[in-house]
Length: 207
Picture 1: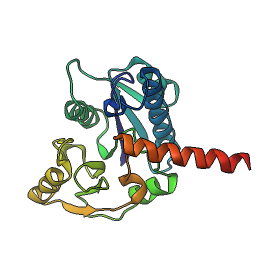
Picture 2: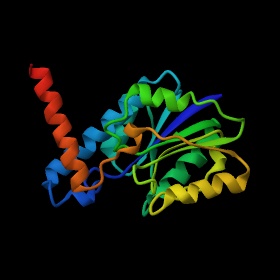
Picture 3: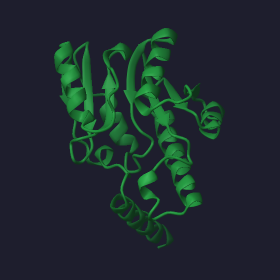
């Protein structure tokens, strides 16, 4: 069975809007690009994933996916995150059905080991594995046995909404807590911590 990763990407000039108070426009664009490329490379390097599908309106992100072994899906105009994910799931159902991992591009602490552990969780034939954010309100990753299992409801309290979908459908529900995947990069406080980690890593490398 094919295992897909779906990576929805906002245009680099629009992502991370809550960081505008601490980043200049060009810095925000560069951060979005770097986060996307880092996440993409982690997915492509996984032996447990067969295909990486990038869905976006950003031509640069789509070109990067094509040039680096991914699949590029032009997001419909006037779309939203949920609509983009639904479009990607529909593409998978008509192209090559299989397991699907959906995750955002802003998971800078996720390691190859975290990704592999998530993808190799033992589940029933029909199951949904959800990784919430640190506040257990949002959804930072979701692994589906089949692409048709989910009506995307990312956004406010998506963790609870996706749990209800899994339980109402009769699928096995696994809530997997992983500190690195749960930690995203949304607020100035998140960015301050991220910046501190990067500086520490740079200092260690110099030593």
